Image 1 (tube, rainbow, N blue to C red):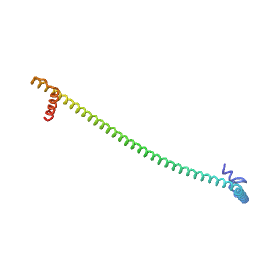
Image 2 (image 1 turned 180 degrees about the vertical axis):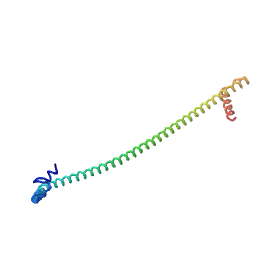
Image 3 (image 1 turned 45 degrees about the vertical axis):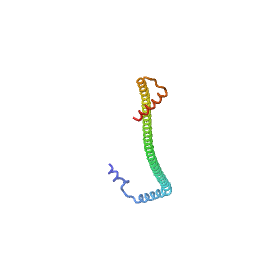
Image 4 (image 1 turned 45 degrees about the horizontal axis):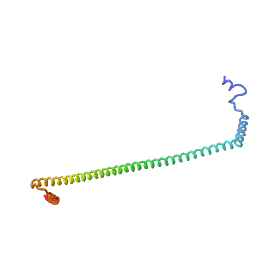
Length: 173
């Protein structure tokens, strides 16, 4: 049916009519001229404006990206600095803790040494006091024994002299 329509009748689509071809070219040229004169400028202006806006958006996006990268680098540097500062603070706290521990241990050692020295002094004083009391008792017993042996009473002056002689003899021995 299509072949019949294309090949038959007065009006065939594939037949070339020179007048129609000329008028088609003239109309095409006029439409092309009108489009070029009135539509092409605004269309290209709109496309150029759109391209400029796209380029501006791309530039702004690149600037924002570079700013974001700079801020990220700055934050990373700050974070690293804070980490280092934290490590420094921890090390300093450990050092202070060690010093405090050493001071406490040294103070405890000194107090223990003082307690030991005081105890030794007290023991020595108690020993000296005990020895003095023993010397006194030995002297009194010696006098009492000597008085019995002699069966006489000794005067206080003789008593003091005998005590002193006995002490000298004990110290000399």
